[in-house]
Image (tube, rainbow, N blue to C red; front, side, top):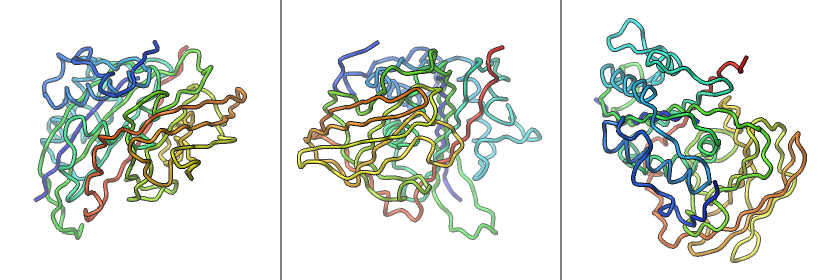
Length: 345
């Protein structure tokens, strides 16, 4: 038998002077009363900490979105699947919709025109199954360079969050020993920005931030970065949601010891079909130094022209240690799926 822990998070997509994540945090999430579990409240709150620090509007809990997410959580707890986490079988008890959009519609929610539903699933195996709780899921997701671009899209239309635990047993033909497994799953619906062209690229870690993490362990399986490797904390630059052809023409990261080597990747390099083409990402080859101040400077080109952007931030001295995920038999995997709503008539 295998214990599965599921986190379901649904997110529907003014300048401040915050310099730390904690300064940006609020005690309550708009619409929080619709959430029934304390850990789920913690997850929703943590997301807004990051969004406020990045100068993005707060995500709110939408009653219909929350209903659709909790309905899917109940279905998963009832049937305990180990595959096809995001789908439901209409012949089974507790069916609330075959896919994310169907479940939203069944709960009375209609996706706005010019919007997209992003479904993200993170599956944890073996020793990694109990590593994260509450806001740690958000810390993990936001560090991932292929997840953060979705969190930084400007217009979230609503949100919902739920967590679940259940037990599964692998079929005999799978050929695997029993594993503890946890699944983190959320839906994000965001609307495309209007106007869709950004005057300046938004950077994260934000300019002036003094508590940026120093390292990141890459757990996605794709060709852009090495799975299981520890890198420096990714630096992202996001342009307008409808700009195309994003290219980093020039870039440099300088720190206490001068310039440092890094990889250049893009938000769509995960090969997921998500289509978040509007984010360029600099990933330092090695962890950054605690207490060190770093500056990242880029020149970006899109179909709308050329612009420069920069951010200067300090790595916090009280950095959470990297969890011992590399001792696990299998690393977590991250999957993504994008559904685009019809354009406005």
